[in-house]
Structure formats: structure tokens, C-alpha cells
Image (cartoon, rainbow, N blue to C red; front, side):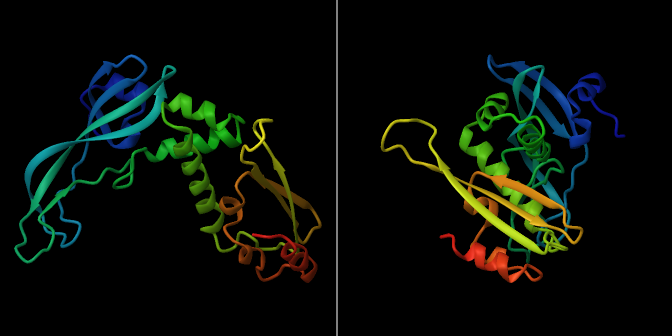
Length: 232
């Protein structure tokens, strides 16, 4: 473990696992602001891999896990460099952080935390968003994207499935006429042992992507005919 500026705070907030060390903190009312800096800094240009010359610093703001019940914002002081290679097209670059993708507004562990709260603790999207101090739309987008990546990034996600069935239903969040409806799907399949597995999702496009995903090799013709009756 690298030495940090505040070992107690880094341990409590678990910023060491983010590759960050806490340099300060502030109470911002409904938010807890944590100032941090990278423990290790990579000064290589992402295009030509040549070491750069330090230019200045920028402050990158990230949503992180709640601390003692309050939403948290990381303010990370990130160094910027000037590329020393005269033939490189990139002139200025900033060091990447191991805890978040470039351009992301959430740490990677927040994405994992969102999925755990929704799938394991059965928290609502609204409650999860409130705990993080972000909007409903952001939490829903992160959850849908992460779920799709988990499922479809594995080419063998339907390995061993012989029968795949689809059901669908519609409901409204309110009783007022004219309010948009939400579409839900339930999907299930049987493995070679005959055991039936079932899963459900709120967004048809997020859950299944498109109709051709049902026509995977190994699915029975009956399942294909059943799935083809639905409009996508």
C-alpha cells in the first residue's frame, strides 16, 4: 500500500482502493466534499507514450459512495502535462485516474454500488439516486448500461439454453389519463437439465437490445416463433 497523507481518513472512506489520498474535506450542507490527489501519477502521453512536462493542475469532480449517510463528491486535483514530442498531435493531456473512466462523472465503484442496491437490496431507482445526490435519469442510465454490458459482453450468455420464452405487460405509475406507460418484459429459458430460469427488466430496449438477440444459436424453433409474435 502506498503511504497517504491522511491514513485514518483514507481508511474510513476507502479512498486508498481508488488510488487517491485525502488532502481535505468540507461540509457543504447536503453534500460532503472530499479533496483528494492521485497517489501515483502517469506522465506519459496517451498518444505517443513520451513523458510530458508538468503544466498545471485541474480539479476533476466525481460522485463517490455516500459517507455516513451523506452524498459525497470527490474533488481530485489532477496534473496536466505538455507533450514533449514535437511530432505528436496531442499538445496537452491530463493524467488518467484508476478509479474512473476518462470523462466519467462517477467512480467505477459507484456503478457497482448502484447495481447492488437495485438488485440485492431491492432499493428503488429514486432512493438510490437520493442516496448519491444525483438525478433519477443518471442512475437509471448507469444501471441499464452496466447491466447490458454484463450480459452481452459475454458471448456465452445463452450457452446451454434450449428454450427461450418472452412475456410482456404494461403498467402506469399514475392513474391520470394521458400519462405514458412503462413497458416490462419477463424472459425465461431452460438449460439442458430442464431447470427454468426467469429474469425481468423494465426497459425492453435496455433489457434485450433488439429482437435479433433472441435468435441465438441453440434456441428451439418454437421459442423463435414465440418471440417473433412481439413487436419490438
